[in-house]
Length: 329
Image (cartoon, rainbow, N blue to C red; front, side, top):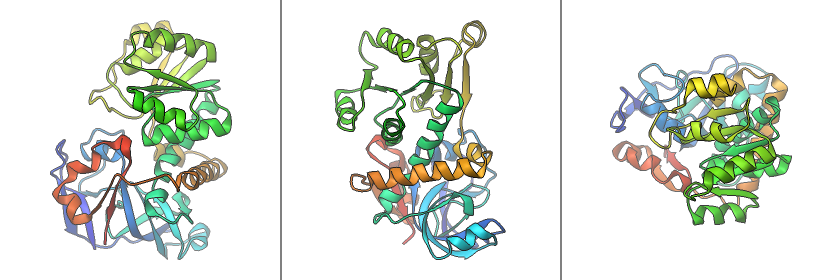
């Protein structure tokens, strides 16, 4: 079968090659999926350049999430239930990615979808992350949540879910256009990072709402700024480096004196450690988000495997405008 594979790590992504490889074989607890399309998410970009939380063994097939139809069950009750069905799925580099004609995924991470368009269904990838991060809010007993890059695809889904669950959300953006977008979907607390009073406003609002958890997609000096404005015993959960810089914090001042935390988060590993009830609840939330956004979701870019090999840099440009999709056929 055809698959986009990484043979060595590179920041310029020139190591993505279209290869002919063996079709993966599902083992017990897994299913084989004929891929309709795979999504190119920011986490994929970090993974391809070896800047992500996990380090895959080379070579590996690209793409961690996609949409397709289950064509073979490796064994197990859950696999039998979804045989022949169209599903959103998440996979891991050690088992096979979604930028290929076929992929293997754990039956637990396959969600049947009735959404008409693949571009809407694949947004469940962000929905899965959003639902998992909202669960962290409950686990850490945070009364409110702070999110930067709030106008991104993930940020919008966090907004929808936070509103549905009654979790106050402080949104950090960088333009009037992003502020208008968030207002249009019902966001209440919106702060522009470029404003001269940004830090003062953020600190006042974080303490007023008791926002003791922040989701950071930016990195660089942003995690320290967040912790400086949040109450003591707060946590910043770091999920991305949109700034192109690693997270920077003053460990003595922050972690010791103010009893705060900076932690990483990798959704697949976190979900795998949860009980079945929690997994089903989060998958259900992700599915509802996908259905809710089906009528307004558009792919930023649609390309074939061949096009993605020739111009991989296009896959991760302007990600706030939507996800790029890779189609095997």
